[in-house]
Length: 178
Image 1 (cartoon, one colour):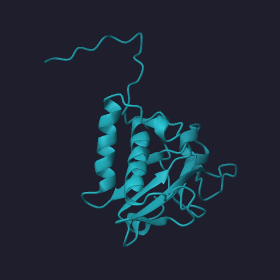
Image 2 (cartoon, rainbow, N blue to C red):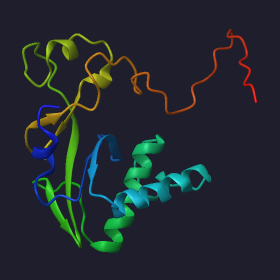
Image 3 (cartoon, helix red, strand yellow):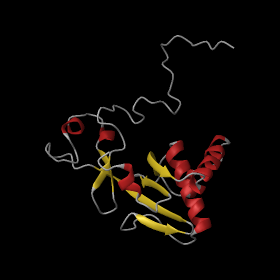
């Protein structure tokens, strides 16, 4: 991160996250107060996802990933309940009052990696073949504050798992002991 978490959140912030380029809510960087309505709702959305309920279709994101889709659904549900009619996307300035909440939303954007000396795209990112490291998290209409993936990442999950991978057809079957 280029900024400290304290600088990202500020004094009054009760929830912070970043919109991804596909319109979902990036789960790479989130912050919240204890007993957050947003996190409670996100748990409800994750449970809905596992029950097979269609979450993404309600909000128009192209993302198919559970975390970002559930986070978007939670954000939409809480804002609809606590500050109806308020739109959190495309707001200039990161801090948005929403009923009892103060929300800070950032925006994921492509990094300017066409010049190797750009400070937003340091050499490890510039020289990495994986496009996922060439995104940054920005203050809306403002400076870079963080990167959603570490510079040496080589795939969308950065080898952290989190979703079912297609099994290798040549691999030995695994056995789970009870």
